[in-house]
Image (cartoon, rainbow, N blue to C red; front, side, top):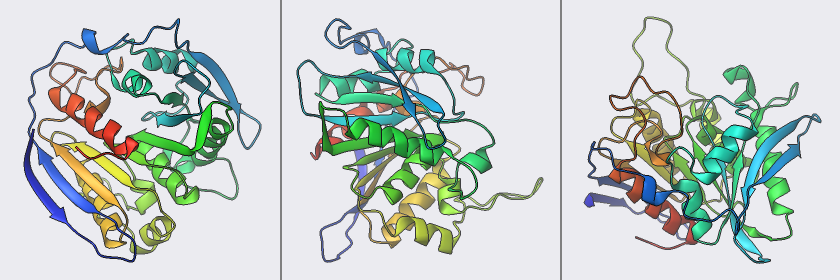
Length: 305
């Protein structure tokens, strides 16, 4: 499926990589039935969990584990906006109720799969760190700490997967928790992480958007986690994903970006049960989503495709 590979090597005292790969892909929807409900709930029941956060509130998480005692690697998946989806939605995703194959695919590979929520509210208020109020970043840290403490989880192999606004959250988490194993950013929206200034109403926005150098540098400097960015050419956020990749590359971080033809915003997860009037066929499963999923599995396992 790979058509063009542009490899940029960055030499620093330890081996890192910075790559951009452009991939083909079709806009034709695929049937998703054979990719979901592939793990019996008798073998891996959904554990409905509420995790206490910094200010005493609780956020929901749906957890599924492989059979056995472990310790298993784990992946924590943070959805896109808005926060505060609630347990019913998280459980549905973890079982692939709507046709999305990602959650069960990692479960098949022997991962504990955690679908984590985070608080909603004003995006500007909850999407950046604050000394005056608790944010979604604090919630994410609480979820990661809870998962690491589970007796069947290998705390040294906890990875993250963030989509859209969840990608902004994951970037802050790998900045603040530098020993996260690996992180995948699907169609990320890291506007706050990069300090991107929004254009005034009626003004044209830069594409790709320009990061605030001081904000981006300060947030990126602590990162030690290898990162994989996934984005589609039909995604209006392709520009910010490119900016994120370029800023990470400039800082010498281990980052790789896969760009898929025809991929819409959030295509990486497939159908999520959301109304998408912006899409001609609504949410569908694309061949590029399946390719991105296999790439993500191998990346998190430390393998190359």
